[in-house]
Length: 185
Ligand SMILES: Cc1cc2nc3c(=O)[nH]c(=O)nc-3n(C[C@H](O)[C@H](O)[C@H](O)COP(=O)(O)O)c2cc1C
Image (cartoon, rainbow, N blue to C red; front, top):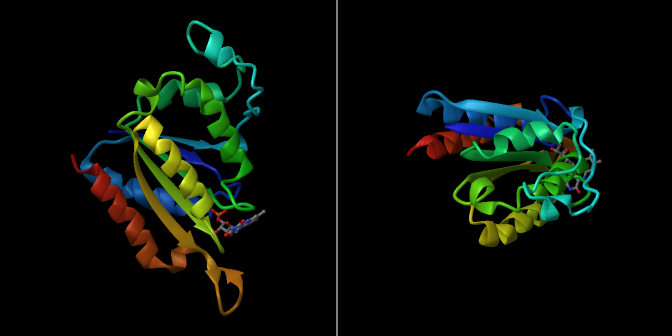
């Protein structure tokens, strides 16, 4: 089994990173698993320029030769693609959205890059996550990937401050269990 993990948070080791880590641990119960982690915030990925090169070129490649090429090179081999991100102003982070926009080049070949893959969306938030889920739910119909969603509210109502997900062992367990479930044939 192979998994691509797209990390959207700029906070290494934050809530979304930690949940992804526990999810992958669950996957590993299936045996050998190859994981490619990409930390969008630490990569040099330019926003899509809408040049339509991916639509008009023979190989549907992206004209921008930057770190996104690393993601392109393994995405097709993945059985599972994890999008793990905090909510920022009502959506996934800009870092992850930039990666998603550049996936336009992959959308030219849905059978290879989307159909029958398992997309796992991990969303950490204080108030709202539904807008990001709604996006994936909508495109799932066209791209025919399977979808699992894991959410974590980091807001402690009493103090009105964020708690780290490591203080919620049941949530870490939920992420781990999801990994185990998806590891089953
Ligand atoms: C710039 C910024 C914008 C945010 N916008 C939202 C938002 O729109 N909705 C929400 O529920 N939480 C929002 N949050 C809270 C984060 O989603 C939350 O703290 C999350 O647990 C952080 O995850 P991380 O530790 O993986 O970075 C925002 C946080 C920041 C720093």
